Image (cartoon, rainbow, N blue to C red; front, side, top):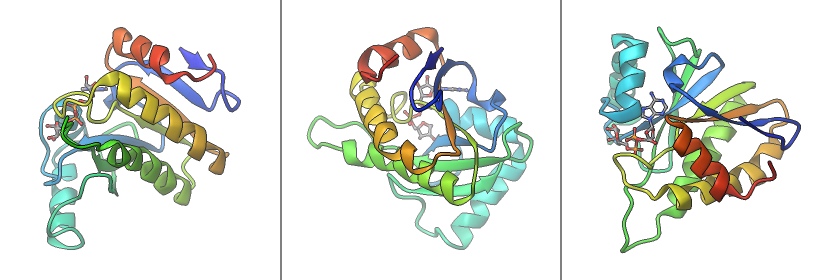
Length: 180
Ligand code: AR6
């Protein structure tokens, strides 16, 4: 599944992000950076205990209070096929407050970090749309906007949006309003 946009630089795929071979995968982590369920748990299991140790080292040094929503931090990928993990924390969905800018920040700052490191292949999961409850249709529109705005700044980067099911990938394509 490909969106022919920006010269095939945005790919929509179905699969397990822990199998992605590239410079980095993005982890939908939580503030503690100590692992969790969902894609975070899968990434920690596949990367091995060295990843948790690297995250603990971040907590001991640069991030004593944890990683705020919308921020990003880089670690090696250890036993993953991907060389690095960009950890980010999506917003917990709330009807009482618009947290779309935090979700946009996760994607934008991950792209910027990848660009700074001259990465060429990066994969994202559907941040916040699982345990954190963000509606997938609203998230799709935010992701599409960030990609449209930010990807042109990093011409060497190819981005894969990795959905866990075909239904999720199809839902994204329906809501994203990107040219197919
Ligand atoms: N590959 C690709 N996508 C996946 C995988 C996988 N291996 N596993 C799950 N997904 P979630 P969140 C999809 O809940 O909503 C953790 O406990 C899943 O189907 O992983 O940001 C953290 O520690 C969904 O579409 O992340 C936090 O506490 C998407 O990934 C909290 O969950 C995101 O679902 C973060 O919640």
